Length: 108
Image 1 (cartoon, rainbow, N blue to C red):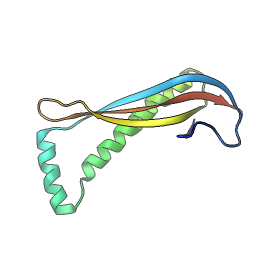
Image 2 (tube, one colour):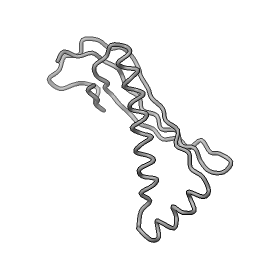
Image 3 (cartoon, rainbow, N blue to C red):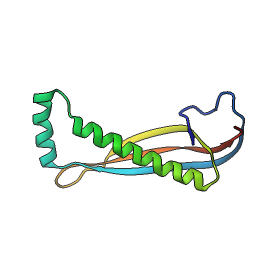
């Protein structure tokens, strides 16, 4: 599956636009994780746990989006955007990662 943030594919002819596809993933955080993350920030200078969690959530959203595009018969997705939204929560935060774009078929 060819993925692009642009609205066209250089040197490729798009033969069909299948429509919008999206994928979501939820990333939950909590008070205890936040506390230990703050300690890691002081000791190591960055929060590698959160960085890995965000990357995993983004990967999951992309996989879901790609599966929906493949189900439509597409071999590419153009105009991809990714958004992050804080949904709140009682003991921490829930972050919704959404990836979306236009599923297309193109000549290889």
